[in-house]
Amino acid sequence: MEYLEKNNLYWQGKYYAPNVENFIFRMYGRILKFDYGIDGSQGESVFDFGMGQGGNLNFFHQLGFNVFGVDIARNDIEIAKKIMPEKADQFKVISPQPEPELKFFPEFFNSPEDGFDIVISIQTFSFLSNTDSNKAIKCIYNQMKPGAKIYVSWCGENHYYKNHATPLGDGLWEVKFNNGRVDYDLRYNFVKNKDDLKEKFKLFKPIYLDHYDASFREEGSEFRYTFFGIKE
Image 1: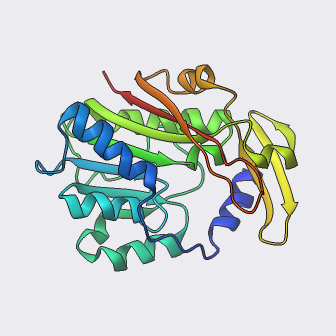
Image 2 (image 1 turned 90 degrees about the horizontal axis):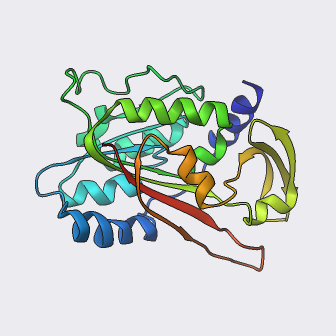
Protein backbone atom coordinates (compact mmCIF):
# COMPACT_ATOMS: atom_id res chain seq x y z
CA MET A 1 0.00 0.00 0.00
CA GLU A 2 2.99 2.33 0.54
CA TYR A 3 3.48 2.99 -3.16
CA LEU A 4 -0.25 3.71 -3.62
CA GLU A 5 -0.17 6.26 -0.81
CA LYS A 6 2.83 8.01 -2.37
CA ASN A 7 1.25 8.17 -5.81
CA ASN A 8 -2.07 9.22 -4.30
CA LEU A 9 -0.37 12.12 -2.52
CA TYR A 10 1.10 13.29 -5.82
CA TRP A 11 -2.25 13.27 -7.62
CA GLN A 12 -3.93 15.35 -4.92
CA GLY A 13 -1.94 18.33 -6.17
CA LYS A 14 -3.15 20.75 -8.82
CA TYR A 15 -2.76 19.69 -12.44
CA TYR A 16 -4.71 21.72 -14.98
CA ALA A 17 -5.94 19.49 -17.82
CA PRO A 18 -9.34 20.64 -19.18
CA ASN A 19 -9.01 19.52 -22.82
CA VAL A 20 -9.48 16.29 -24.74
CA GLU A 21 -6.17 14.63 -25.59
CA ASN A 22 -5.46 14.33 -29.30
CA PHE A 23 -5.12 10.54 -29.33
CA ILE A 24 -8.61 10.22 -27.80
CA PHE A 25 -10.00 12.57 -30.44
CA ARG A 26 -8.36 10.51 -33.19
CA MET A 27 -9.30 7.16 -31.66
CA TYR A 28 -12.94 8.29 -31.73
CA GLY A 29 -12.84 9.28 -35.40
CA ARG A 30 -10.60 6.54 -36.73
CA ILE A 31 -11.79 3.56 -34.69
CA LEU A 32 -15.07 4.04 -32.83
CA LYS A 33 -16.84 5.98 -35.57
CA PHE A 34 -15.11 4.62 -38.68
CA ASP A 35 -14.74 0.93 -37.73
CA TYR A 36 -17.83 0.46 -35.58
CA GLY A 37 -20.24 3.30 -36.40
CA ILE A 38 -20.26 4.43 -32.75
CA ASP A 39 -20.78 8.20 -32.70
CA GLY A 40 -22.78 8.95 -29.55
CA SER A 41 -26.12 9.25 -31.33
CA GLN A 42 -27.43 6.23 -29.40
CA GLY A 43 -26.32 7.58 -26.04
CA GLU A 44 -23.67 4.90 -25.63
CA SER A 45 -21.94 4.86 -22.26
CA VAL A 46 -18.26 5.80 -21.87
CA PHE A 47 -16.37 5.07 -18.65
CA ASP A 48 -13.00 6.67 -17.90
CA PHE A 49 -10.82 4.91 -15.31
CA GLY A 50 -8.59 7.70 -14.03
CA MET A 51 -10.63 10.54 -15.53
CA GLY A 52 -8.71 13.46 -14.03
CA GLN A 53 -10.65 16.69 -14.59
CA GLY A 54 -12.83 15.10 -17.25
CA GLY A 55 -11.35 16.60 -20.41
CA ASN A 56 -11.73 13.36 -22.36
CA LEU A 57 -15.19 12.65 -20.96
CA ASN A 58 -16.39 16.16 -21.77
CA PHE A 59 -15.48 15.53 -25.41
CA PHE A 60 -17.66 12.41 -25.45
CA HIS A 61 -20.38 14.17 -23.47
CA GLN A 62 -20.63 16.90 -26.11
CA LEU A 63 -21.13 14.18 -28.74
CA GLY A 64 -24.08 12.66 -26.88
CA PHE A 65 -22.41 9.80 -25.02
CA ASN A 66 -23.51 8.98 -21.46
CA VAL A 67 -20.31 9.54 -19.50
CA PHE A 68 -19.05 8.03 -16.25
CA GLY A 69 -15.69 8.33 -14.55
CA VAL A 70 -13.64 7.70 -11.42
CA ASP A 71 -10.36 9.02 -10.07
CA ILE A 72 -8.39 8.99 -6.82
CA ALA A 73 -7.93 12.79 -6.90
CA ARG A 74 -10.81 14.55 -5.15
CA ASN A 75 -9.80 17.98 -6.47
CA ASP A 76 -9.99 16.75 -10.06
CA ILE A 77 -13.39 15.13 -9.57
CA GLU A 78 -14.75 18.37 -8.12
CA ILE A 79 -13.52 20.29 -11.17
CA ALA A 80 -15.13 17.75 -13.52
CA LYS A 81 -18.43 18.11 -11.69
CA LYS A 82 -18.33 21.88 -12.24
CA ILE A 83 -17.54 21.42 -15.94
CA MET A 84 -20.38 18.90 -16.40
CA PRO A 85 -22.83 19.55 -13.54
CA GLU A 86 -25.57 17.54 -15.27
CA LYS A 87 -23.34 14.44 -14.94
CA ALA A 88 -22.00 15.15 -11.45
CA ASP A 89 -23.53 12.03 -9.90
CA GLN A 90 -21.69 9.94 -12.52
CA PHE A 91 -18.21 10.99 -11.35
CA LYS A 92 -16.74 9.44 -8.21
CA VAL A 93 -13.63 9.46 -6.04
CA ILE A 94 -12.33 5.92 -5.49
CA SER A 95 -9.69 4.36 -3.27
CA PRO A 96 -6.17 4.02 -4.72
CA GLN A 97 -6.38 0.30 -3.87
CA PRO A 98 -8.08 -1.64 -6.72
CA GLU A 99 -10.73 -4.20 -5.74
CA PRO A 100 -11.80 -6.81 -8.34
CA GLU A 101 -15.39 -6.97 -7.04
CA LEU A 102 -15.96 -3.22 -6.70
CA LYS A 103 -19.02 -1.84 -8.51
CA PHE A 104 -18.34 1.73 -9.58
CA PHE A 105 -21.96 2.75 -10.25
CA PRO A 106 -24.35 0.08 -8.96
CA GLU A 107 -27.19 2.61 -8.98
CA PHE A 108 -27.00 2.73 -12.79
CA PHE A 109 -26.09 -0.87 -13.54
CA ASN A 110 -28.29 -3.31 -11.66
CA SER A 111 -28.63 -6.35 -13.92
CA PRO A 112 -26.21 -8.69 -15.74
CA GLU A 113 -27.25 -7.09 -19.04
CA ASP A 114 -26.09 -3.66 -17.86
CA GLY A 115 -22.55 -2.41 -18.30
CA PHE A 116 -20.33 0.10 -20.05
CA ASP A 117 -20.23 0.24 -23.85
CA ILE A 118 -16.79 1.88 -24.00
CA VAL A 119 -13.94 2.14 -21.49
CA ILE A 120 -10.96 4.47 -21.74
CA SER A 121 -7.99 4.72 -19.39
CA ILE A 122 -5.09 6.99 -20.26
CA GLN A 123 -1.79 6.40 -18.42
CA THR A 124 -3.58 5.34 -15.24
CA PHE A 125 -2.34 1.74 -15.23
CA SER A 126 1.25 3.00 -15.32
CA PHE A 127 0.80 3.89 -11.63
CA LEU A 128 -0.20 0.38 -10.54
CA SER A 129 1.86 -2.71 -9.75
CA ASN A 130 1.34 -5.84 -11.82
CA THR A 131 -0.76 -7.32 -9.01
CA ASP A 132 -2.95 -4.24 -8.63
CA SER A 133 -3.31 -3.63 -12.37
CA ASN A 134 -4.61 -7.19 -12.76
CA LYS A 135 -7.21 -6.47 -10.08
CA ALA A 136 -8.26 -3.22 -11.76
CA ILE A 137 -8.52 -4.83 -15.20
CA LYS A 138 -10.69 -7.63 -13.81
CA CYS A 139 -12.89 -5.08 -12.04
CA ILE A 140 -13.38 -3.09 -15.25
CA TYR A 141 -13.96 -6.22 -17.36
CA ASN A 142 -16.77 -7.32 -15.02
CA GLN A 143 -18.59 -4.02 -15.59
CA MET A 144 -18.50 -4.02 -19.40
CA LYS A 145 -21.19 -5.34 -21.74
CA PRO A 146 -20.31 -8.21 -24.08
CA GLY A 147 -18.97 -6.56 -27.22
CA ALA A 148 -17.86 -3.44 -25.31
CA LYS A 149 -14.70 -1.66 -26.44
CA ILE A 150 -11.68 -0.68 -24.35
CA TYR A 151 -8.88 1.79 -25.18
CA VAL A 152 -5.88 2.10 -22.85
CA SER A 153 -2.48 3.77 -22.91
CA TRP A 154 0.51 2.58 -20.87
CA CYS A 155 4.07 3.94 -20.69
CA GLY A 156 6.69 2.01 -22.66
CA GLU A 157 10.17 1.20 -21.41
CA ASN A 158 11.71 3.82 -23.73
CA HIS A 159 9.82 6.62 -21.95
CA TYR A 160 12.36 9.04 -20.53
CA TYR A 161 11.13 8.35 -16.99
CA LYS A 162 12.92 5.00 -17.24
CA ASN A 163 16.26 6.87 -17.33
CA HIS A 164 15.56 7.95 -13.75
CA ALA A 165 14.10 4.65 -12.48
CA THR A 166 15.19 1.99 -10.01
CA PRO A 167 13.40 -1.41 -9.94
CA LEU A 168 11.26 -2.21 -6.89
CA GLY A 169 9.53 -5.46 -7.90
CA ASP A 170 6.03 -6.50 -9.04
CA GLY A 171 6.49 -4.40 -12.18
CA LEU A 172 7.13 -1.17 -10.25
CA TRP A 173 10.03 1.23 -10.57
CA GLU A 174 10.95 4.16 -8.36
CA VAL A 175 11.03 7.24 -10.60
CA LYS A 176 12.80 10.06 -8.82
CA PHE A 177 14.27 13.21 -10.40
CA ASN A 178 14.10 16.99 -10.48
CA ASN A 179 14.77 18.67 -13.83
CA GLY A 180 13.76 22.17 -12.76
CA ARG A 181 10.31 21.83 -14.32
CA VAL A 182 9.08 18.86 -12.30
CA ASP A 183 10.12 17.23 -9.06
CA TYR A 184 9.03 13.58 -9.25
CA ASP A 185 9.06 10.86 -6.63
CA LEU A 186 6.66 8.26 -8.07
CA ARG A 187 6.17 4.52 -8.41
CA TYR A 188 5.77 3.58 -12.06
CA ASN A 189 5.07 0.53 -14.21
CA PHE A 190 6.51 0.29 -17.74
CA VAL A 191 5.29 -1.96 -20.57
CA LYS A 192 8.11 -3.85 -22.28
CA ASN A 193 6.53 -4.23 -25.73
CA LYS A 194 3.25 -4.96 -27.52
CA ASP A 195 3.29 -8.61 -26.48
CA ASP A 196 3.60 -7.55 -22.84
CA LEU A 197 0.66 -5.17 -23.23
CA LYS A 198 -1.40 -7.85 -24.97
CA GLU A 199 -0.73 -10.24 -22.09
CA LYS A 200 -1.83 -7.65 -19.52
CA PHE A 201 -5.19 -7.32 -21.30
CA LYS A 202 -5.60 -11.00 -22.13
CA LEU A 203 -9.23 -10.91 -20.95
CA PHE A 204 -10.01 -8.93 -24.12
CA LYS A 205 -9.80 -9.73 -27.81
CA PRO A 206 -6.98 -7.50 -29.14
CA ILE A 207 -7.84 -5.39 -32.19
CA TYR A 208 -5.20 -2.66 -32.39
CA LEU A 209 -1.88 -2.38 -30.54
CA ASP A 210 -0.27 0.94 -31.39
CA HIS A 211 1.61 3.82 -29.76
CA TYR A 212 2.01 7.58 -29.54
CA ASP A 213 4.98 9.73 -28.60
CA ALA A 214 6.07 13.31 -27.96
CA SER A 215 9.13 15.20 -26.81
CA PHE A 216 9.41 18.71 -25.37
CA ARG A 217 12.38 20.79 -24.16
CA GLU A 218 14.61 17.87 -25.18
CA GLU A 219 13.54 16.09 -21.99
CA GLY A 220 13.18 12.83 -23.88
CA SER A 221 10.61 10.47 -25.35
CA GLU A 222 7.13 10.24 -23.80
CA PHE A 223 6.45 6.97 -25.62
CA ARG A 224 3.25 5.14 -24.67
CA TYR A 225 1.69 1.98 -26.05
CA THR A 226 -2.04 1.81 -26.73
CA PHE A 227 -4.37 -1.17 -26.62
CA PHE A 228 -7.78 -1.29 -28.28
CA GLY A 229 -9.77 -4.46 -27.63
CA ILE A 230 -13.20 -5.99 -27.23
CA LYS A 231 -14.89 -7.93 -24.47
CA GLU A 232 -16.22 -11.05 -26.19
